[in-house]
Length: 330
Image (cartoon, rainbow, N blue to C red):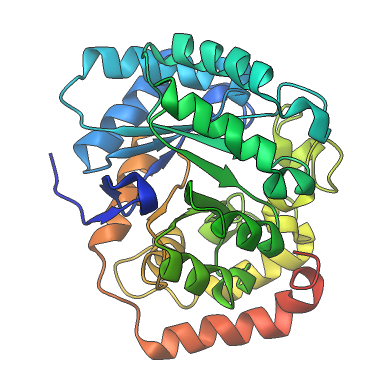
């Protein structure tokens, strides 16, 4: 197994790898992934030094959790912290974020993952009012007291939601979209999290694959792929698909970004390296549908830091091509 840099995940007090493994893809929302291929991805990640898996109870209606549970049952030596999410199994109204529902969702996730206590449970981008509800945090504290969960956290869509959650003393970490096409969290969220001792989990790090540089304006995605059916937020928040950027705009910007990749690194690895070195980031969670992708993602942790000239070029690209479209929205 390769050793990878570890950072403390906020108020959990536990260390995780700077590159984690996102598992939305394994649920099937990016196209079908066979069980054997899914286990291969997880195994390649662990062998590459990954000690952090991120999932959710709605990824493949629980399939992602189940696959992780079965994999870790056979790899008790893996030393992986598993973060899951809850809240999207019901209508998205504040009234559904109550203790009884939390227990029901928690029971399902514990069964899927094959564990009595979940390492970390994140509220899965709930309605904005949930982040400021005392009753919600009381209910989460109850789950900790009942030893159903080890710690709790939030996944957010906006910087305002992140800042509201960071102010709560029990919130261990915040998961937020962060990549070279989404820079707004750098302004306030990351400094506030660092000051409060709250971890930052960077999701959608490759802007749904745009930053890999593999796609053109003519690329066609399958009908079951959210990059087809959610481009304008038809199924869930638009920011989860291509970071909320118009596809054609993103393809053009990604071509420019690819030119910034240092020798020996792919554009995707460059994007991950950029995220890793942002002050306050704990872990970045790219997804993978193949062993090769999982290994390549993990290898980004071993790249040398990007020089200031590259960081400046990323900022310039964002300001010229992306900022006007996404900065104020999120």
